[in-house]
Image (cartoon, rainbow, N blue to C red):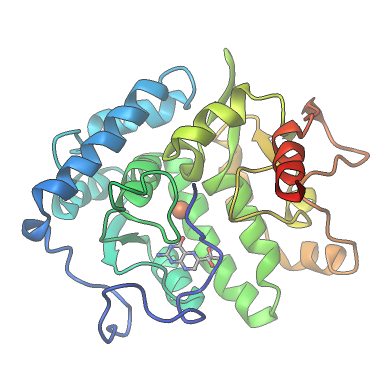
Length: 298
Ligand code: HBI
Ligand code: FE
């Protein structure tokens, strides 16, 4: 399952294994200290996703990961990943123990530093984890940071996040992040593809988001997305599809303040609801979530 990106580290204490954090929460990756078992977990995850992604993830993701020093045989070394990122978009990844407080997260992102979990999930929990680990952050997010549109949009999200904290309206911007950077789909000439890192790093969701008839797939609309709740602990009920990654350049330029003023009094939409005005690509049966709810009642 996906990391619970929404929770703040300060709400549930420092991440596992963390000692007193530095002011910016960064730690040394300490690459030499990864054990053979940890490299083996990386390999399992890498090979599982690499088989699944061609034909499902967007072409840009595949082109980017090919250019990066990210391979099956070992956990990537941030120093090497950063050489490649720096050349392309000026982004860097910095190691953190796990979730960091929102203001710390946004400050890094606004400065083109992506906080990446230093640890890797255990081999008994390949699919479910509470915090973003190195596989989610480096396999899922890092390749997309080589894409110029994602690179600019991500930085704008950092600035927007700091502004949203000031205004006290964090949910609006975190929903935008959720339904783009984490769980976004994109229309490609040969079909709908994945670009969100929460999907591309998840075995189950990579298939479910595109092939299952359960979830809604809806054309992306900024205000609509900002009003839509999401779940952090299960497969999504709705995905939003952008027309092309380059649309994110435009989104990165938008001043959200007038948008917040417009939507602040409008009702929040539940994650499964289709509303008038939606460009519906697929109306979900929601079978997966209905069955799960029925099973938990039985
Ligand atoms: N910390 N390491 C890490 N990764 C995240 O994705 C993250 C975080 N802290 C806060 C956070 N995300 C979210 O609450 C914001 O994106 C809204
Ligand atoms: Fe993430």
